[in-house]
Image 1 (cartoon, rainbow, N blue to C red):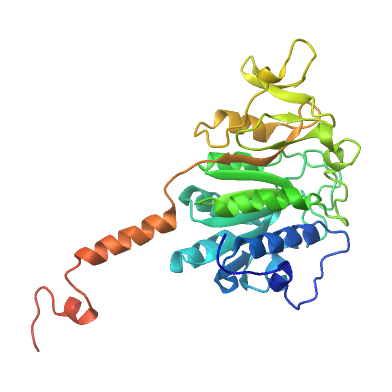
Image 2 (spheres, rainbow, N blue to C red; image 1 turned 135 degrees about the vertical axis):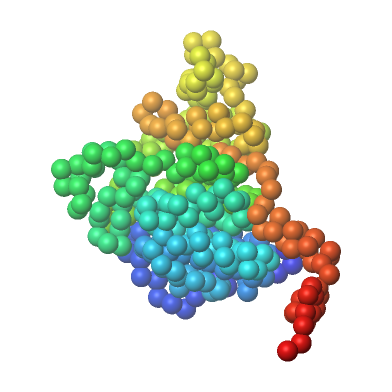
Amino acid sequence: MGEYVYDAKDFKSSTEVRWCPGCGDHAIITAIQRVMAGLGKKRSDYAIISGIGCSSRFPYYMNTYGFHTIHGRASAVASGVKAANPKLHVWQITGDGDALAIGGNHFIHLVRRNLDINVVLFNNKIYGLTKGQYSPTTDRGAKTKSSPFGTVEDPFVPGQLVLGARGTFFARAIDSNVKMSQEILELADNHEGTSVVEVLQNCVIFNSGIHDVITKADDREDRQIYLKHGEKMIFGVNRDKGLVFEKGKLKAVTIGQDGYTMEDILVHDAEDPDLYMHTALINMAWPEMPVAFGVIRSVKAPVYDQAMEEQIEGIQAKRKNTCVDDLLHSGNTWEV
């Protein structure tokens, strides 16, 4: 906890919020404003960077510094901001189209470099701002404005991309659960390096209900599992279901049936450097398995901006030339 005391309203700008009524973005910005208020960091040290898309209007609605950039370039600009001033707390707000289509190359290299940036990736599986075309995360067969007969492509799984790019932190949240989002975003901010939080978000106009199969009140406890480091992987309305590892893969079981006891249930280790279990958790999908939420991976690795500062300081400490005049008069010189 830092030294500055704020309320969530201190992070709300006077700009009218123009997201559609019922859009999941409203819940996400509420969670982020509450998190930032509770971190105790100086408000003027925050920089919110976005690309293009409904989510990318975010900087206008935040009472912080921000930059609404161009399509797909949020990762590049956020990297530049952090490299130029590593003391800033940089949050990148992006969508599944902005980050994973035109911005895909920038995104994977941001993750690979491991700059200390918090990436919040809104995933509604559609291009909402441009009126309903399919995106890189749209499910195969989905009928959209640009695929009226159904898509013939398999979608990206954001977590797979993060792990493939040697990512050190990946978490998944959902717009309708603000409390869960706050807990996850706080952990993301505490992580040193690039944190990627995928937030499953609902577009009420062009892809309404896309996440309903796992979010409806009657079923969500049995179709979601909220993972916490060091705790048993259990879920269900009665907290009587859990994950075990059998024959090289994860399996969902009911505790007390078929001989399974609480002792058989796996303990979540988000800090395991090995990718195998984290990959398996990311890939879980209903109806075969519950969908995993929470911090799935959080490991330590060298941080780009910290390494860059250390390198610069080391070079400066050893340099012979301390100013431009020294440089110009070094080596062989002559007068004309």
